[in-house]
Length: 277
Image 1: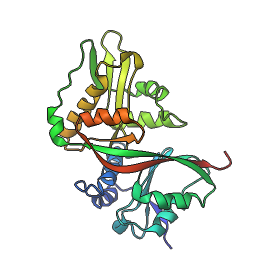
Image 2: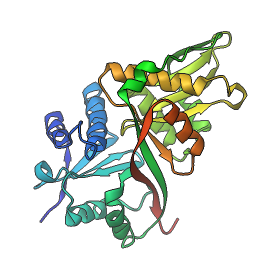
Image 3: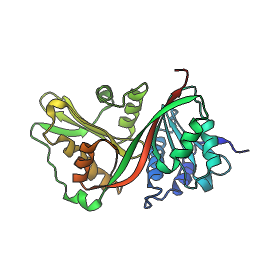
Image 4: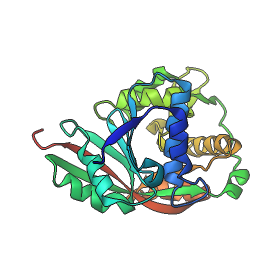
């Protein structure tokens, strides 16, 4: 009988990641998600709020995983197996709320079908992923305006980011603290007051996220500055620069297109909670 197990060994996690090819548009999403959490475990071997679930007997072939990171779930596979996906989702603790993040479109039907058989209510949002052309990175030379500086966010900035984040919810502060601790994250600060006025982080699935500029400082090119800074830094590490944008957010689509980002694939976010809430 198939059942889930938790992969704890970093070498096993790397074997799982090897099933997802970085160069393939079909599997790149899974590659960057797994790379993110492998990096986290290498930085902190005692990390206890992230669990990587796989099917014990077949994970080396199917690549199916469910990653639980606090209140978020990341689900993907290389070989589509409806039985495995259904079993995996049914095995999670649905007495609590989850946010399924960046679900590949190919898995949406089976995930919805499975959730409909559980005591769960959910809503979903449709997003498009974009990737930046490498040639465009070399052409972008946005300069930091006088009186401001770009530097990494600190964990103490997490509360500010969370308070103004449209996706704020229970657990999101802890999530942002972990992202700032383990991933590249940048802020724009006023030199005279040290006030944080704009920021961007890198989410666990490898996308730029939480991009925000305080309203009173908009129209000074600070969002463009942060996108350019991220592009340059990730390019030096040989990684793709990727972003996930709500299908209704034309402003962000236009902004990232200006920086050479091209449409890649459709993904979904599902907000799930027990029906008795």
